[in-house]
Length: 258
Image (cartoon, rainbow, N blue to C red; front, side, top):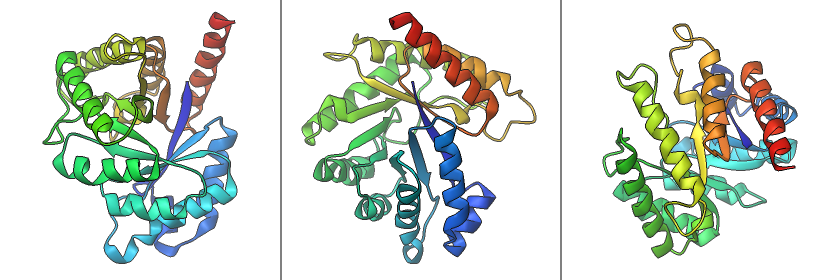
């Protein structure tokens, strides 16, 4: 399982201040700590950027690729921001994220095809809504697969994110169960011609709820997702609970396949 650090997010006050001041040192320090913790990918999410601040994505790219060898994930709902990041990348990044929304299919998909990058496809419908049931999730995955292939990408270029629920949702645990099934179906090759690559944002579970729910829930969730075959997890790489659980899952999985 690949650990994808989600620590460079504009919602973090340290990151937000560094972006505002174009201060490279805090960004560099966080990125290096994530790499030392075992992350091999890092998600760069500068949040909302006005036109005069669009250079912040390129700034993040410049700092991270100078400081680490991690693979970069450019994370923005706006194609123009992704394009700014692409212009600074020395190696091909991954674009996050495609959905069934018309503007995403129109703008982000061609950008991925033009630059021959992989793309994270979130299982969200035309209204950016995450369906509860596995049947609806798989239906969206099929539509995104077809759009990607028609747009010039291969199935291997698409990383599917079934979208984990937030625990504040009334049906969160049922949705989590349906997400596990979706991961299992996608990774097993039961849906497409072969196994599909999957990713999940573990931080979604307790986002805004860390005082109400213990870190043990992240650890249990990570274990269940790993058992379902998840290949990539987007998470706080600097959380000792998560990093320890991720290392144990990785070691045990390697032992099973030895």
